[in-house]
Image (cartoon, rainbow, N blue to C red; front, top):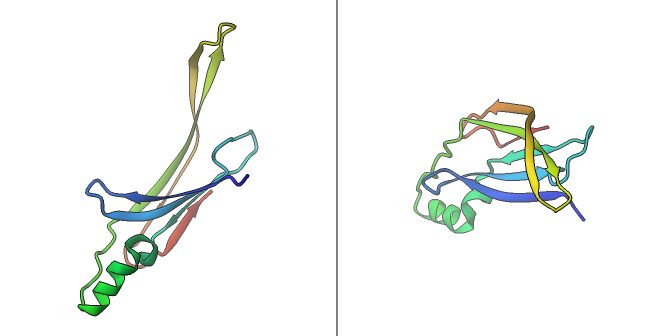
Length: 112
């Protein structure tokens, strides 16, 4: 099975910001790699209906307001008891990355 997941991310008002693709993130192992890809392509985000209407009525497309992207790889350690109970014992922040986005100019960005 493939370890690739894609979802559309939106701001609090529901305006789409990017298409987010996660690769290698479902089961991490020491030495493993994960990639987070942000795609700001207006055709993917807004859909053909919005793009066609903008062309037909000479409307400007809404400027996507994302200015920076970031990702943090976090994990936790669990204690599993004989009776099946689980208890979180520690939380870890393994890595983080971020990058600037120029609205209208940045098409995509990957963080690994």
